[in-house]
Structures are given as C-alpha cells and as structure tokens.
Image (cartoon, rainbow, N blue to C red; front, side, top):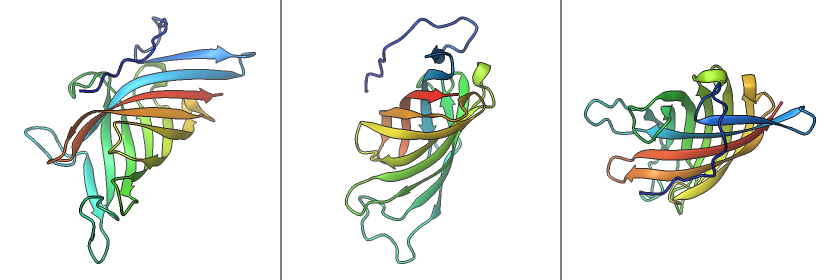
Length: 181
C-alpha cells in the first residue's frame, strides 16, 4: 500500500471536499488542486464491470510479453473520492492508453477527466503524455480543459495505490495541480 498523503489546505464549505480553487495575482488566473482515485478494471471480477478494453494489437502479435508493445486500450474509468470503488463518484476518465515501449511497460495516455461533482460538474481536464506505470509515482502533463478548467495547464502526480499483476486491475491516486482562467 502506498501512502497518498498530500499537503492539505483549508476547504471552502461551499465547494467539493476533493478539490480547492484559489485566485492568484489580480484574479485573472486561478489555481485548483484536486485529489481523487482512478479505478482501471481490465478483467471483470465479481460484480465489477470492465472499464478498460483492448481495442487493437500489433498485426504480427507482440514479441515482448513484458511490455505489451503495441496494445491499445479504450477506457471509461470511474474517479472516486477515496480508494474504495463504492465511495462517492466525482467523475470519469475517458480515452485511451497504449503500450509505446518495447523494453518496459510505458503507456502513452490520452484521457479526458470529466467531473460530475460540485462546482466542477460538467468541467474536464485533459491529460496526455508518457505514463511509465511500473513506477509507483509518475508525473503527467495537463494539456487543457473545459468549463471551470478552461485554458488549463499543469501536472498530475499519479501514485499506484493498488495493482493486481494477474488481472491487470489498478487503483491510482491522482493529485492534480492546474492553473486556469
């Protein structure tokens, strides 16, 4: 189990407990810090539905079973308040990831994180970049957003909370810092 403790700040009671937005400078730009958990389920177990599906593989098949080079997955993963799959849903991550390395497990990730809670309902962030999932902690770029997060830029720290090597199911804690209009 990985400790996902992050620095906390005083929350405004009128906003969500999983995110906080502050104005900077002359109020032209805001900074938001979000904390949530990503649930990626490639193999259905019990009553959990599959949230990631293999949609493409190399024509010749992959020579490297370690990295899965060339495999492409489409995802619709829930984002929750805590690592418990049944905790409050704060959004969904939709998009794709594919194995882009022949030597190690390294995905290129293109996901839209759409939020459904509080003042962030209907807003989204786009994360696109290299995701070396074998590393317990990694940094990914935030390249855009919509709604509250219009013109977003920033970074996401992803920490593996749980990973089942046999089923390839994972829970990942995200701490995201974005600057936006």
